[in-house]
Image 1: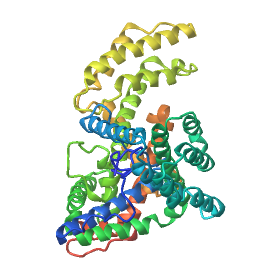
Image 2: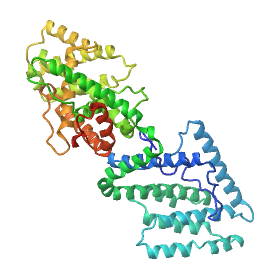
Image 3: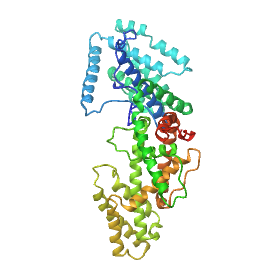
Image 4: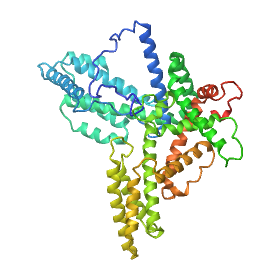
Amino acid sequence: MQNANPIEEVGGDTPCDVPCLQKPDSPTGSPPKQASLADMMEFENCVSNLSLAHEIVMNKDFSFRQNSPPKDSLEGRISDIVHSAFWDCLQEQLSCSPPDYVHAVILLQEVKTTVLSLLLPGHVRLKAQVEEVLDLELIQQQADHGALDLQRLSGYIINTMASLCAPVRDPEIKTLRDLSDPVELLRGIFRVLGLMKTDMVNFTVQSLRPNLLQQAVQYERAKFQEILEKQPEFLDKTTVWLQVAAREEALVSAQSDLDPGTPKPRGPLSPTAALNRAYLQLLSWDPHDQNYPETVLMDRARIDALGQRLSLLVFEASVLLLTSTQCGAAVFSLQGFVGKLKQTITALLEGSHNRDFDLQGALLGLREQVLVQVKEALITQEGPVLPQDSEDVLKGQISDLAKDNNPIHTLIGERVQGYLQAMLEGGPTKKSPSVPPALRLLSAEVAELGMAFGQMVHFNRSVFGPFYAPILRKLLFPSGEAEMGEDSR
């Protein structure tokens, strides 16, 4: 499994231009003798299936791809040596007098099997033709008598591939037609067939995706239940995650009840509020913390990316707010000014979420660029220059964003958090909340972030709600004085 969601890619670790050289009747490996090993393999397979199904559902652009080690890695160098040795050996066999066709026949057998696997049920006539032309008994007889015409068979195979492949593979097919050396032809055929197999898998995945979307919640929930039956402790980190969120929610509730501005106590703690708080905590999760909750582990890469985007948006909104306050609305009304300023902020603060990022240095450079663009805009408008004291104040305010508990940065962060919380509380079927005025200049970006996060959370809650409910019930209502509602799901 891959990307932050490890998805096993088609082809495994074996490049697609190298056949297995194993005859169909060759014995397979012995089954595991230890029950514990079998259990581990079954558990891993269950997790892999769950992760794969989840990735297909959550990532509309999901696709398999050929997997091969990096060329500059030790694995890559060894792989290149082994593959070159294999094809060099075949070259020597075919160069003998008379030629040795033992491996070539096995290669053609694998080619035939792969081509047949690409055929659809309606390809009845084509299947019969492939069986006739690539008749292995006849090919073996021709090889035994030194009359095997690899060039003719390769030509037929390429023509068949051309009729089956997607248009994106047309350049590869054309390249194959230009090859004359039989070894290079076979090697190229295996490579392109591997690509075609991947294309077929991706086509199948996209075709099945609408059906999978309808069954995704039930499927993932059932698979996770299987995992729990094999590993009962697989909810331990999730329990700790919810404990922290429930504790914080209780603290906020207690402070709210003591606030004289609050008309009356809020009543029992809400499981939904505690769960939403837990989800929001994921956006600022320490990337080095390995205690990530199991139920959201498959989305960690996506949530981490959203958290990084959130951090950058808070800085962008803070700089835009400070700049507009000091420079006035006239400058910001200039066509293209806000967009250019946003690009500058993004470029200079990209990576600000990283621990080793020099935030202070980046802000020093940013404040100079902001003033340059403001002055250019004022000249374009033929307006008065920015007073020196306003320049100094703006420069200082931008630099101060690096300080802990900076009021502007804190305010913007609270506004974004409030928007995201409202997005979670609204549910997937309700209208999205309005973007706060302080975030108006980034309304599209904030709305996009909220939509992506909300969809992810709502799907997660639909799948794992029945697993969260008993945990939250025990945390929030240890004496059984209240019951969990449907809103916990």
